Length: 383
Image 1 (cartoon, helix red, strand yellow):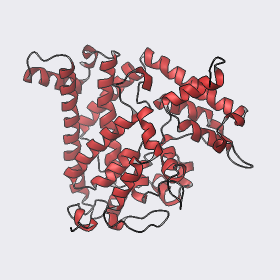
Image 2 (cartoon, helix red, strand yellow):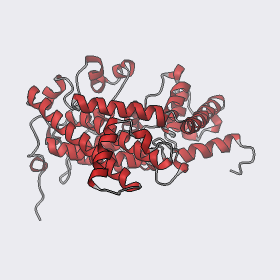
Image 3 (tube, one colour):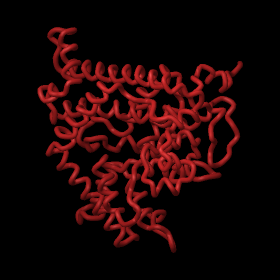
Image 4 (cartoon, helix red, strand yellow):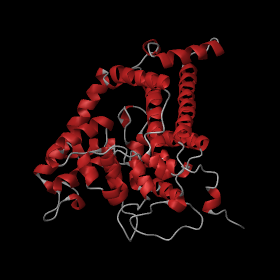
């Protein structure tokens, strides 16, 4: 039986795509695999990590126990990876790299979505703050414990730079080569740029689905959004008498397709105009992965609609307030008495106790955080 070499597997890639043979490498040198590319190995390591499994019980918008059919961070990450791979194939980019980035991009997210992140950032205000993108990097660089020779997953530079979508200048300065682009204004790989916009495509459209499923959004409300109204009208015209979930699913499907096609076509034109000959030329250029102005504005209108009508819906705000209270209560309790923490999170002499507490809380699932809060604060809790 013969095996296909990594070089052959990547022979179809465009000159500006990332290639395993030209990776900037791993922090800890490892022998190359005979059967997988370096980016395939990164993807596999992410999938087998503890942090990835926890995403099943971390919320997107709705807290995990509120319903079985709402998106979680895990299903969202899978959807991002699917969208990103389909776009990457059309642009002749490295599908394995874009998948690895997509699957890893939310590994550092707190329980309770953005509400939890905001609460933990507030708790850490005087201790360096909390950035979920940086936390995702810390998870793969330090916090995972799977290998005998090093902390973390020892991923390639290219996957790590894709995970770090945003970063403050202070933290970027401490990251060396990985943080340099935030200080100099250069760009990451096209694969990293693509994963970022695939994330936006996934959460905008799927938050519509979850919002309608929950009853917090109505079809009539959504008709004020041009992109939705146009695609819904197409669905009704194509399938007279269609109703219920079929209308929603068919409309969302068409919206996603419109965004993907526009992104492929616009990015293709951007690449042709810039004419990068290598990944280094991509890094030196401006952002190349983008929507057309028309679709960009329609997507922005959709985001504003979701912010007003879903993310700021009073029922979502109530749950967000509860979530923030849970995070703040836990943090303050652990700061007041570190003996309440599991032993591995109790700082030794000179260690950074607030940061260890942030690591512990950020790693919690929604339901674990709720249970931990009950254990500490509910006098009737049996365990």
